Length: 134
Image 1: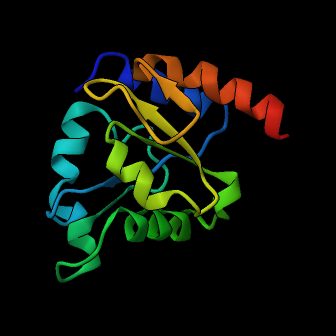
Image 2: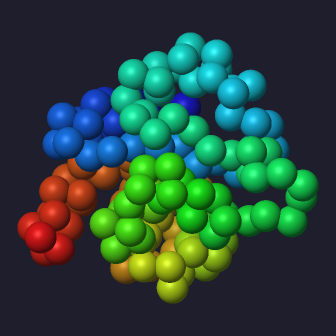
C-alpha cells in the first residue's frame, strides 16, 4: 500500500466525499473484502468495491469499470474524480467527464492536467478543485 493512502481516505471522508475502489484486478470484489478489511479500506469506502472480475467475461476495461462505479454511487461523471497511478487508465476514461487525477508513483507523464506525486496530496487537490468546480 502506498504511504498516506488511509490518512488521505479518512480526510476525504471527513470532507464528505464518497469513495469507491475500482480495481483492474480480475478477482471479484466479494473475494477481496477480507483483504480490503485487513488493510483498513472498508472503514472509508462507502460504495465498496468494483473490479474487472465483477464485470463478467474478459473484454471489459477501466472505462467500463468507472462507469459501473459511478452507477453504484449514483453520480454523474462531472461530480466525480477518478484517481489512478496508470496513464493508460486515464486515456481510457478521458472524455467521460470525470476529473482525472494521475498519481506519479512510477509513471511521470499522464494525459491529464492534474498530477500529484503522492496520494497524500489528494485531499489538498480535491479541496482546491472543489473551490474551482463549486
